[in-house]
Length: 370
Ligand code: SAH
Image (tube, rainbow, N blue to C red; front, side):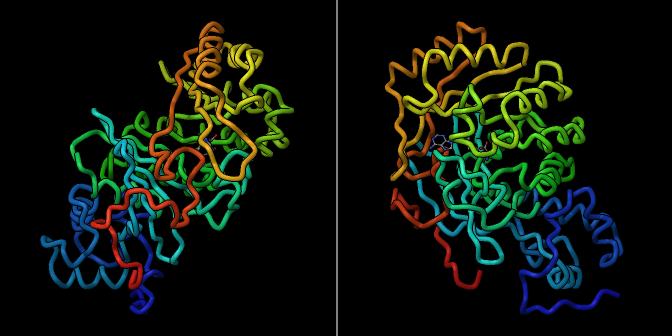
């Protein structure tokens, strides 16, 4: 028999969200006699968006009461939502220990993209990124990562559109590789959200040791995006300290040796900083560096952050850079970030309640009692 946990400490209950849903049967076997009850719980959680055992009406009352005492399926809460004029929403997500993290909802015509965080803060200190400036507070658990997607999905205005997940919020996913790998597995679990690997993208600064280990995920390996951001080690080390440990050649060789699937492509993100990495030579070198890789390039004009010594290049420089990359034989798109007016854009996330933006008070929930 399992000891009854202390009910005053709700947050200390084990979260089923830490496990892929197809393992809930085994996890719950010690508490409930009929294995199909676990599938019923998964149905409430993943199909109906119900996270309170008491409201899972097809479970016997005693089972509901028992589960409430033993475990939790509660995802992070939405403490506040800011909505951009382009429809993007930035959410402050409250975690069980009182920490908070940001997640972003980006609606498109044919899909919704959810941008999730993997850590509270980040320890990689990229010079041009707000999250890098705040430093690392802690890594998220698997349940907290999957939970962001669950909670945001419950709030979608167009719940029937396909959902894409990008691990591009706060934190470096490969600095929390174990929990992130479990979350990626959980998101693809057929009893759970059942997303295809094609709908999940992991973005990394280039933690080479962990990129190599991604191969262990086999068919579950998500799409990859690499924040390259420079074409020489001198410049990259200057703006991304991680490059001193894993320079460009090592990073690219790790990527080359991943087992690429048919038609799969790897995205290289390239934040354009005026006078730093936006020269014609950079564009040409990008083509040389990535030759032979199934690569495409996303050029991200730098999003202004107060107090940082960078500037976004002119529209003309950006376009010339793109054309030069194309001439080198690579696909290149300019990605203007969404949600810049509410601090939801690439590089702007740092989880303080700041920038008023257009707040959606209807989604506000009291933080006390969480
Ligand atoms: N740590 C991972 C996940 C975060 S993704 C990574 O770096 O890949 C965030 C993306 O936004 C990265 O490609 C990063 O290079 C980019 N970025 C950071 N600050 C930015 C800014 N101010 N403007 C535009 N893009 C930025």
